[in-house]
Amino acid sequence: MSTLQSLDVSGKRIFLRCDLNVPLKDGVIGDDGRIRASLPTMEYLLAAGASLVVGAHLGRPKGEIKAELSLAPIAVRLSELLGRPVIFAGDNFQEQARSLAPGEILLLENLRFNAGETSKDETERATFAGVLASLAQGYVGDGFGAVHRKHASVFDLPALLPHAPGFLVSAEVEVLKKLTQNPARPYGVILGGAKVSDKIGVISNLLDKVDVMAIGGGMVFTFLAALGKDIGNSMVEVDSIPVVKELIARAQTLGVDLRLPSDIVTAPAFSANSPATIVSADDIAEGSMGLDIGPTSAKDFAQAISTCATVFWNGPMGVFEFPAFAHGTKVVAEALTHVTGISVVGGGDSAAAVRSLGFADSDFGYISTGGGASLEYLEGKALPGLTALGL
Ligand code: ADP
Ligand code: MG
Image (tube, rainbow, N blue to C red):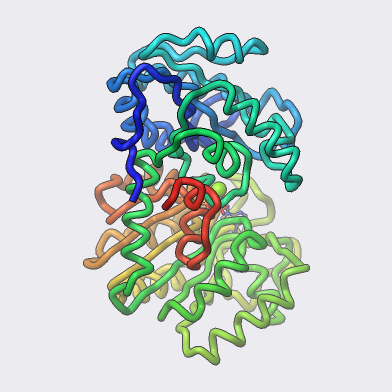
């Protein structure tokens, strides 16, 4: 397996792809876990005499420059954490990169401001990758949260330069391998969060690999709707209902213990102070929306987790950012801390959730920086960013 140590970096300019996609609101960084997770590789490369051109993305600007998605605040935090200056790239980034001395770091602006980064058109991506390649003499891939994306800086660029995985990517793969190669059973997966369409493929592919699957979060309402229940104004993806119906039927055929919440915490509006009411999942009132799984369901999910020897969890059970709707997430997190086998928490918001609820990273077997990436790995898919690194 290729390793970072095998790459010759001394005196070289290294393009380091990181995942610095942290929660950011009004320019203020929430959980900086992903920045911290990038530090060991940076420190190693700097100590080995390299200069760094760091590339990363923030959010989904879709090829347009969006001031609120600038990486400028991240340059500041990164500099604080590293204890050394971080140059933030301007329009003259090519010149800035060329004049880097060993030990210096240049952070590029949000790569996704350029349409070439995420383009489905190979030529467009290749052109952007070429621009990035001209900045450096070697490539280190350490942005685990983005390795499932066939993007220029993740997939096309490493092919143009001598390359190696960073420490974070290697560590993530090591852990996920344990979950895919003969996991200790029962094997449970707990899913929540907001991105239903992103995760439906994952659920489908994981169904024949797991013993237990529990679903909460915003995506559960598409499941409840598929079961014919009224879901009021809850988040839903109507287009996905037919597929979800098939998933529910398949779970039954496969004998997977599919757990959906029996009670829901609802509120009239999506806001921190909206009054919370616990209702049966069969009685979500018109005009109200589900913002968390109810306490009975949380207990049920915790019980399911306690029977498992291997557990993977991605996606908060509710809108944990609002304390009144964080209970389900907290109960599930707590249950995970008692798993005696392997427990892995994956996903940017999931990691942020457990930290903001007062848990320590060491309470869990492993906190993955990647949500979508770790899920796709568990599905057994080839991930473009890992393939490109020879992993
Ligand atoms: P991750 O980043 O861990 O992969 P996602 O990005 O898929 O997770 O989802 C996280 C988001 O889901 C959180 O911001 C949370 O507020 C939101 N969420 C959870 N439950 C609900 C719900 N019932 N309604 C709306 N949003 C929800
Ligand atoms: Mg997220």
